[in-house]
Image (cartoon, rainbow, N blue to C red; front, side):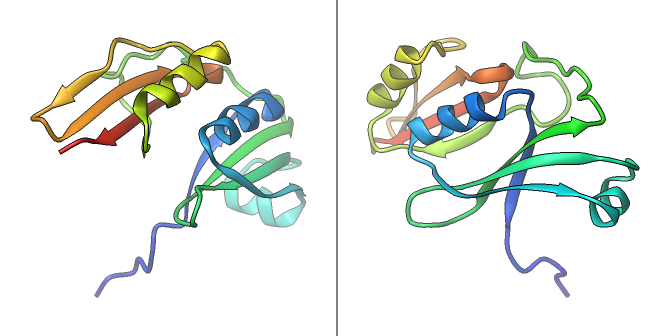
Length: 146
């Protein structure tokens, strides 16, 4: 018996909620909502008493798995590894299929976010690139070509 019904969302804790939200909106995500969460519920779930976080929920066009961005006001956020390479253990990247890889890469570059390496092609079926977004978030962008 499976306990999982669906993949609901991915959560990322960030320091600059507006900047990171703008990055994902530029890729095509839509803001679904924005709220502040504090009190017994969040204290219990994350095991940090007295916590307070602002959350933005984003969805890709047409629906699908959401992206939750959280920015903690209490307690102060702890530093992460913003320049982590692809082989560092832990969540390393978010991957999105795009219609026009070059246009998506150009958009990210115009906003100040560059490629980690280059644009690669996999077996004539996919073109893909890693973009290092705000706060070191590694975003894989892929375009089906075959």
